[in-house]
Length: 590
Image 1 (cartoon, helix red, strand yellow):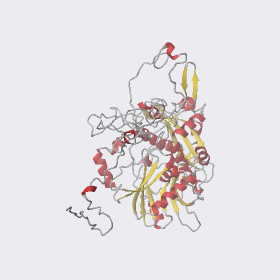
Image 2 (image 1 turned 180 degrees about the vertical axis):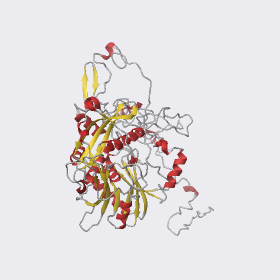
Image 3 (image 1 turned 135 degrees about the horizontal axis):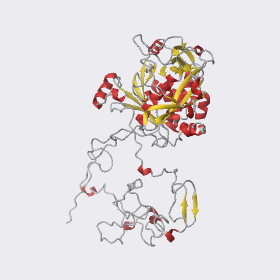
Image 4 (image 1 turned 180 degrees about the horizontal axis):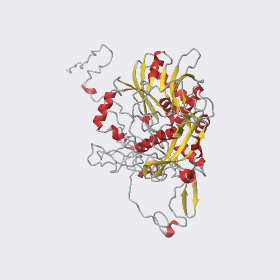
């Protein structure tokens, strides 16, 4: 008699219907293995078929191009023979390997110089026909030549014209102006194209106090030409560039709750012209209660003047050797070049300081003008004479509505006054003095600038246009500083090296005079856009708690980032430790 036995019943310990996911029967042990479709006509002769024919237009592993894969008799297109099943071995299985790595960015670089043959790139004589059978890359659209194909536009690729021999140029990687510590936390990241869309109209400012003494501008410098050039002199004069938090006047105004934001014109102009900047910079911001203080670091980017920052091929600093790679030789030459970005920046700063001192009349007539109060930074123990400089503390209203109380107090600077243009004590006839410098028109990083000695008198417009292109950010900041200070005129000197190989001797070739508002129109500088940027950054910081923050411009991307940093960051002790660690001598660096 046949026996009947009940099958094993696996109860669900979870208390639900159906089998338990944690206690599966043995017959369900292949549950998680993917199902591979198959066909009864498959020939099981290979363990792995590397020549698998893909029927879903995916790239096979044969190294074929996409054109061969999809056109004509390619394996993935219309060339598949009729009757082939779209499953089993006729399609890619779930276990097939597909090489998805993008190799389009890989390129083989050959630095050997090959001799050019006449008649074409690869042929000679008849093979190329008249005009050369090769390709000639030159400018814009395609244009046929005789006996060959001439292409204008740097190849058929879209995306603009490529520079000649770009592969020989070094990578345009720069170091950040300040080392980003792992302890810092990034709060915000803003792209430049977003900053360029901001706009805020601001009314005329209110003047609070004026400090310093102003000398008259020497109008003889307006008549200098390339034939009557004048050497640049080294004159020792004291001129202060104190940051916001160390300014005693700013501390007094903050104690009276004069404004919400406190800064200087140098720092504010850098922030307002941020979308034009290429080189890295940073602004240290401290929030104390309901007040914001925008500061700069001593020896930072705001203490120097850049050169050809916006040029297509700006000056570069040599790349230091990698200490972790013993085979990596340092790119720093034995004799340091005078045309690196850092060297040119120090040279331009030296030129601007000395030209501003030389271009004024220290002996009457006309007499110097003392503003309402003496220089607030000049102590009784100082012995060197002061340079011509006037400080004007002004308050701008950044409120959007009449009820909103958001003001910014700015310390602005003027360098001289123009005699016969009114009373400088009332803000009339004020002048700012700046200088553009030429180092070597044939050197790398010159930005295609013409020779000033031959073109400045006959083709001044071409020289000015080239400088506006190569130094767009620097000129925009100078213009914004003049507008913030309420200056009537900007005096811009054209100063060149006496010898292109000597960076210590310079000559003044010419001086131009222009109104800041007119120059802002030529440069397409919008004060409304700059105030919109300032208001946006202020709103971001007012949402944060009290503490110290730093706004950093990315060294290689058009992006600014806001970091929260410890209170001990950027202190004098930390700077000394960093200098001791680097092993640099600050006096030699200066």
